[in-house]
Image (cartoon, rainbow, N blue to C red; front, side, top):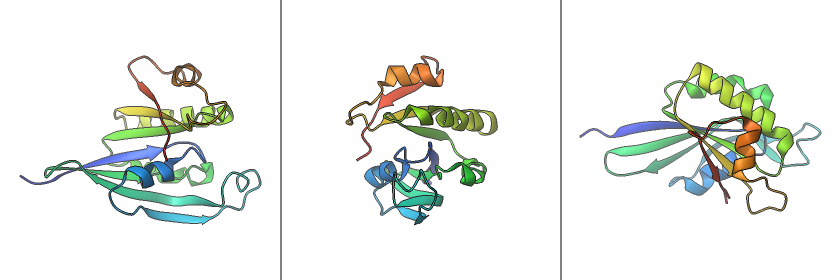
Length: 157
């Protein structure tokens, strides 16, 4: 039987942990397109940022392989959402549980993909190991998500 390639998009606000998540779960070295962070307010969080996409792969079995496409987190690169969303069958939205100021951006990302590329999605509440992390249930409420959506605790490292 031919291998089934399953495209999953990993998205979320800036510094939510998308690249680290793909690095952690991919069986291949993550293909990254990064540049030095230059904007004030962003370079204090991290030195480099994704400018096009991250790519990873997980072979499930002989017939199924997940292809992971990570989106850039900075809004000036949100045109990549449309490019990476084509053909996706699932979405992982990562949220920095310690940074509620980014929750509105996470909701904007969810709204975009729901309207343009409807597919099942989950929300990963990253950085749950850090002080001040919001609980998944509080993040569900903040993002106005129904009970049918999986909102999961996560530590991407």
